[in-house]
Image (cartoon, rainbow, N blue to C red; front, side, top):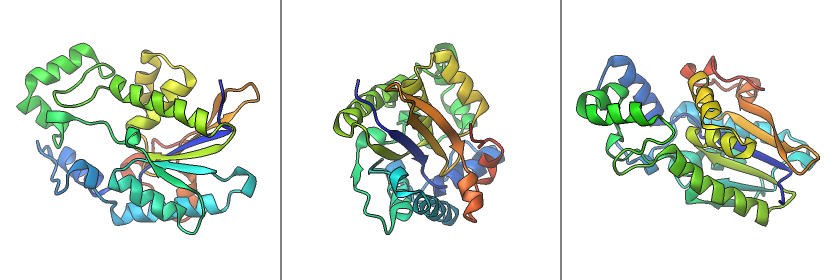
Length: 243
């Protein structure tokens, strides 16, 4: 199978919804105070700083290691992250709806406490089916997202063989790309989700290993944020470590 030279995925910078969700969970609220639909949630000021810092990291890469193309989730927080990070570059940018965040259906905008209070049957069903296969009414399971990512990877390998491809997306996509690229099992994937929180503007990278395969070279790395003078999101910081 044709392979890429390098694949990166950058999670979007801190969004206003990330800030609201952290506050809602900490306060025991049932609802997250959201003023936008999920696709229109913007970056917070901290998220903008993180995206600019990611751009400074990109600018310091040698020419032979810079991305050939960027593919971006159409959700505003990812689009804003890509614009700030790629400002001043001539890297071609494409949007692809297959990189959108996981859709939560009737659970959208609820905290964990809110789901248990308002939809106890769904909380029980999720517990019974497990995180990987559970699909909330009107939403997507992790396997649904994996299917759209699988088709995206196939297109990237066909259209950009031997190239360096940079993705801008969302936290679940980082985990699921590891599942797909590295051939993880459900148990291995779920173990990752229990031990790691994907940090805002973290970098995950795979590079060709000489045998026409991609090998993980960095995971959930935010060292560039500190090096470039940006603050990692507080609740993410202790979880974000390079491989």
